Amino acid sequence: MDMNHVHLTLWQYLWAAHCIALPAFALVVCGWCQMQLARLLSFCGLLPEASEAKVRRMLLGLSRKGFLLRANRALLLRAFCNGLWKLQPRIYHLVLENLCTGVASIDDTEGHNVATFAYSPFPMYVDCDDCDDCDSKVRFEVKKRMVVKLDLETKDFLTAELDGETLALMDAAVLLTHCESNVNHGKMHAYANWGIDPADSTSPYLQKMSVVTACYNHYGFTNFPRMASNLVHKDAGPAVEAVLVESLNTGVAEHRLVAKLAEHSRLLKFMIQLRVPFRQAFNHCRADFPANYSCEAHYLGTVVHSLDHWAFCQHVDPWLFSALTPSKHLQTLHRTVLLARCCAVDDIPTLGLEKYFRDGSTEFHRMVYQAAKDLDVNFADQIQTCIVR
Image 1 (cartoon, rainbow, N blue to C red):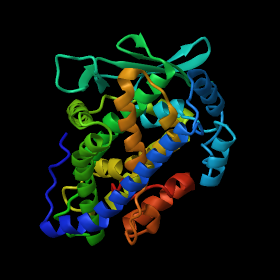
Image 2 (cartoon, rainbow, N blue to C red):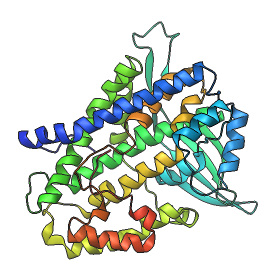
Image 3 (cartoon, rainbow, N blue to C red):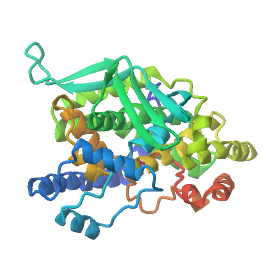
Image 4 (tube, helix red, strand yellow):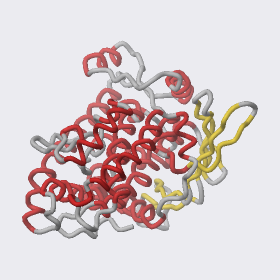
């Protein structure tokens, strides 16, 4: 897959540089301030380290609840000042919903449905301060396989192994979050390029959304490694870029068992059920789309991509993630993933840009939104018409 093959005119690029790049830069500034605030709270003892026992207790407690209740800023700071630690990662739902395409099998084990997820190959990078034979202090590696097991009945995260070695809980949390943000998610951006056409003016609105998607794909693929080098470690950028390239070369494995996982996830059920009305609306409005639009790529770049971002924000809380203490060799990877979570995942303040299906900019978008609303209005309101984060 290729991330940067879509051509734009000079004026299209200049428009995006003002309407998209500047708000994206504002998000980076806000995210960086959030990271520094977390460091300050940690230094002052108001952001306690998350021990493995505490993380596991919180995982088990949260996995039996509904959607994450997000505290407002005042309550958040009050909780820190009282020495409380209420924010919890959601490894179970992160794997089930964001990393669902890795599902390899679902087995009945002692009356429990246990789902096994395999991610192979597994590109990553590690700190190597003790490596005297290399110039870089961050080494890119490709592991053979990462295997994760979930109990679908009790909604528990069971185990995670990397090349046959059992991972500590916090290492698993960091590596799985890395797998989603740096390995899995970028493939959606690449596929989405086949569902856009900035050169075709058949629909001015679709053309504008195509420019936004093409530019944001370029910004993410080109600029994020530079951010990692400047804001995390000078050797982090090349390692991040190597991970992105390796993930695009690998593609997506066969994942028909995702349909069975939908029995355990409202989000997966929603995305699967919406595919049929989405295609029907696309075929009904086919004359409004450029001839080379791929319906499936457009679906991935709109419905799946935006809901993947939404779910990631729900499952990975930046405050708790910043307090994790993984193994020494994963420190740079941890900070880089935290950079992505704080600076590149949340929605950007694009004022004046109708970027949601609920805005109903065309007949196609109105048809899809109505079908999505009939399935689940909360998810329907999160679907965006382009890649803008």
